[in-house]
Every structure is written in C-alpha cells, then in structure tokens.
Length: 165
Image 1: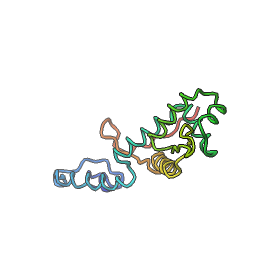
Image 2: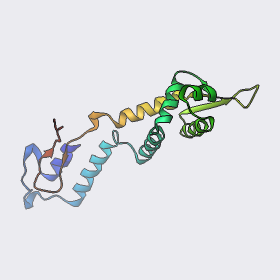
Image 3: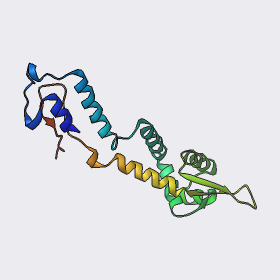
Image 4: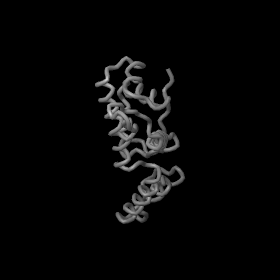
C-alpha cells in the first residue's frame, strides 16, 4: 500500500527528488492511488462503528469495581449476596454496576423461577470472546505502518523507536 503511494509520488527506491515536469502526476492518479491506499488499509483499520463499540466496552470496564465483578463472574454464576459478601459492596451498588455490564452485553441476568427476588448473573462468553478478539485486533502491533510525513523537512518514511531510560 505504501509502495503504490511512493510510486505515484515519484519516491520509488528511496528517491527523494520531486518528479520533473514530464513526470508530473494528474489529480486522477493521486485520487486513484489514495483510493488503493485506503481500501488496502480497510482490512486492518477498524471502522468508526467498531471503534465506538470498543470505546464503550472499555469505558464500562474502566471502573475497577466492574472489573472485580466481572472477575467474580468468570469464576461462575453469582447472585447479589455472593458478590456483596466477596467484595464488600452494598446490594444497590452491585445492582447498578451489573446493570451497566448488562447494557454493555457482557453479563447475563436470570431471575430465579421460584423466587423472582433472586437474580443470578453470569458472563456472556460470546460477548467476552468478541471483545477479546476486537481488542486483540486493535492492539495488534503488526498493524503499525511506517508513514511518510507530509510536513517538515523529512521525506523518508518515519519509524518511531522506543526510548529506553
């Protein structure tokens, strides 16, 4: 994908020269190259909708109490009293956090068929797996691409390296 853009811009083989007037590129060439560049990148770049969904899930999990509740549910089905006893949280606070986790689709709730006052919570394994996959794709280091700066004196691809202290 970067090679196509380098070719159109005349920077193949590390050549930093500006194309001569006989090699000038048309706006159609630029549009086509950018189209190729962007469409090739779509396979790895998450869509705005996917990013919004991932952002909502991460916001839900940003609360340490929700992480503790989710960790408890990973260990098996739990009711409010089990969660409250283990985490030292009030029942209304647990209900609030469980409601947020349920709205995010990460937790399932089921009322006891004999006494509807009792609610049992469990992790939705499908939703948890989808979140894991989405986060893994987003954080995949192989997605990092070198970029050619469009401003400043540098025309070579920029590779940022980690600073060691």
